[in-house]
Image (cartoon, rainbow, N blue to C red; front, side, top):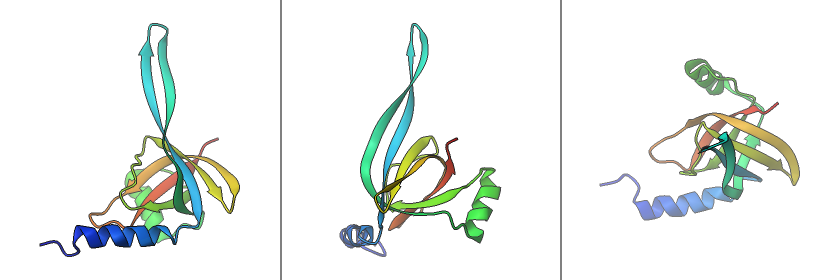
Length: 124
């Protein structure tokens, strides 16, 4: 028996999305092989996704970066089970102001997710 029934977890996830004040788009980069070589194509997986953006990094963020060997400039909280991988990019909007495009450095997943923690590095 599950600790929290799936129907309850889904309802809790819907409620938790309301606490995410910012928005973002998740873009997946895919390679297409053609006779002229390799072309990178950007595919928007999701647009207008509720999120929470912060550049204030904590101890757990530094530990994640050290353990994974990645650089982190910001952290994004997305709704639980949002499709996002370390191969993706996100464009972030905070308070209606575009904050730029970031590469995903890593994703912290859990079995009972209300939110998904995504580690970002600024695209230069």
